[in-house]
Image 1 (cartoon, helix red, strand yellow):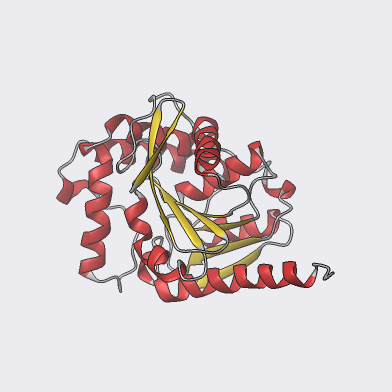
Image 2 (cartoon, rainbow, N blue to C red; image 1 turned 60 degrees about the horizontal axis):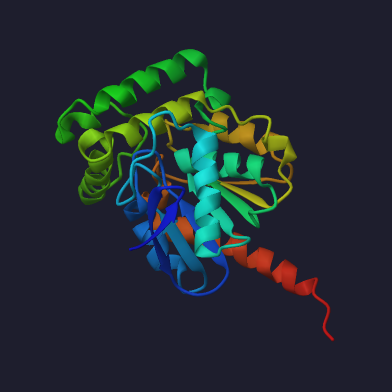
Length: 276
């Protein structure tokens, strides 16, 4: 892992492969380890950048007062620090809302958006009573032992998810749910609960792919349909038989959709270039 200093916050990240830049923004309890299958599967054709968001993994803690705008400003600072100008941006769950906040602040930076298991923030996609219940549950999870932390959090996995996969991801989440980064964990939870990014959606004018698991109970199809209806020209792909962690449950299919989307964009770009 490399690192960069952004306004006093140390950001850990990996850079793998060669080709057009693809930036991976992980979910709210995750860090860059959760992208292992995408880093391995897509770095043959893309330069894949995966950060540990502030308060996650090997990155340092942010102030507990941070919300999506502060995270997005830090993301922009990190992109500048590592010299990434116009990346394709892939965000999962919490990371999808961060990608939208990034677009709100600097619409010129992303070359495209891939929003997986996505929300327009919880406040922008869920009823207020559900937002309040989720926030309470997420914050309470930090007070539980790791083996109890994720009991009752339905929709993160499908019933077909292997025990090894569940153990792998729960171990990552437990690291970031109060054990290592209590302030960052709480800041991320509040940021997601308060984020309402519905106003950004109709203004998006870069190619956008929406990827969802068919059995996702955390970000269900009504949320997916809402984003597809609001984002001009957005393409929605539903991966059958998987839940919220669709990138890990069905990595080959997930990666194939990402590759197909980005390769098509590159082919369109090449066809529009003049030859002297």
